[in-house]
Image 1: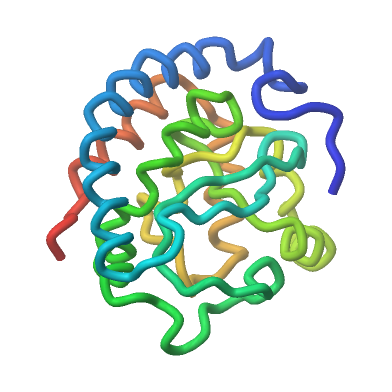
Image 2 (image 1 turned 90 degrees about the horizontal axis):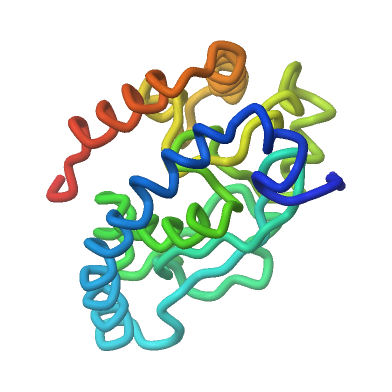
Length: 200
């Protein structure tokens, strides 16, 4: 999927200026607070699992534009990661399993938010290979690209993630986009924080 521009510099820039402002107002202090924790987790990955501490992968955002998503690495390097839907058995590292359960591996995506590649709230970003497949098979899937990809979203706060039906996630994402307001973003962020259980 090709797009005319990346992130907020594309077709959504005028309509969602307030959304971008919210991302900056909240994203800058959030990254400042999270930076020491990210550094500690990165050190733990290096000491416990060895190898690179960051996982980088091309995903799609507003307008279907590609960008490089950044996470803390939780799995062993896999050359087929871009086209493999499920993580192979045994690929998740020992420390990585805890990071995935707590979602702390997602913290570096705050950098993607500040770059304007993602938003704090929006549809979760997908890999180009699967985005092409879903666009051809799932009704309404391409409509998700009317909004930048998000760190959390309407589908996530409804528990629609992982192995939940993709159709339901698409409906939730498009409903969020159709009825977008700044208040709705704040409500989703509040719900995400309230339901976050890093110790589970």
